[in-house]
Amino acid sequence: MKKILVLLMVTLLVVTGCKAFEDTPTKVVNRFLNNYKNNDEAVINELNDYLATQDLDEETLEDYREIYLRQYSNMDFVIKNEKIDGDKADVDVQITVYDYYKTNMASGDYFTANQADFVDDNGDVDISKYLAYKIKKMLDTTDTVDYTLTINLNKINDKWEIEPLTTEQLSKLHGTYEY
Image 1 (cartoon, rainbow, N blue to C red):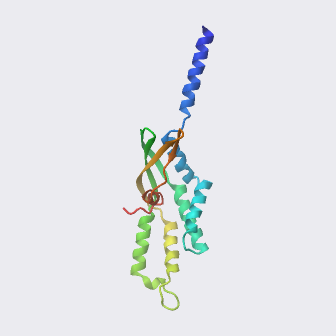
Image 2: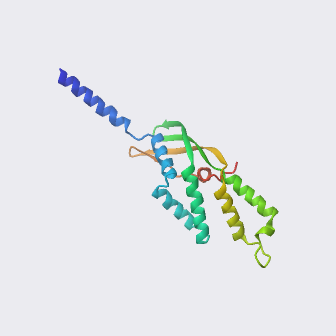
Image 3: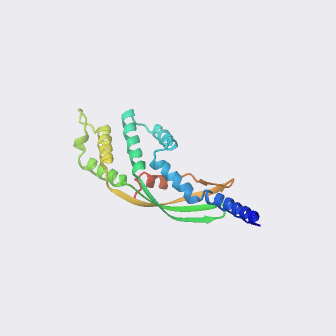
């Protein structure tokens, strides 16, 4: 009888213990966002692929890479809610990121009001001077902003997978969402 009871307890522990280690939508989103915070190789590769599509010189690309990696590393997040409906799930997350939107707006306003600061030797506006100014301001940004992201997941082959992020979600993650 003791052996049967011990066997039942071990079986119950194994079954419930395995269930405890199963990925949930919240765990998948937590791991996903931590990959950003930790500048995971996949995140860096995705960023490099994106930057390669931009028509910028190498120095400016490096500056933007630094800006994005700084944003990701310093992002804070709190998972607020998980809603599962069959093979679909939504996870609400509050993120805190550098407010690059405000920095971009202030840089643009300064450029508009002070174009003489951005001219070349011929008296023409030199956009590269403006980009250098804007990048410096972004690297100096300390103001943060909070956004709410709803990350959608689908269960495929018993595994929760995050749907591709929308442009709005990415702009929030990058701190450039227009509010």
